Image (cartoon, rainbow, N blue to C red; front, side, top):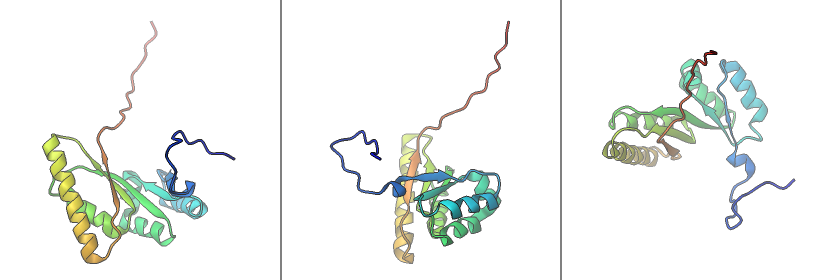
Length: 152
């Protein structure tokens, strides 16, 4: 089966498995781990959002990692520029492959937060011998609007 690739001048460097991320936004930690067990050999990474992280905590991330799976921690860190780097370091210590930052506010504040986060994560990973995770900056989120349509 031929895969569609819309960029003929670019060569894909990674296998499909490495580009595939499955969301674990299920209501239950047990169900999420069953899905990890079923798909870990064919999926490159699993996304853990806020609800699942709050329900399972850091130990849940460690369980996924112990199963040999990669984790995208989707918590969109967004507090002050001094607090985001601390949260980012803890995500790196959990062994996640990727996490995200909410890039909102003034341009100067965003740049300060991203610069501090990158520097602190790099420093801690170097000192502690950790793999440095990828950091995504989420600049805009899609908003779901619900509106009531009345019939006249």
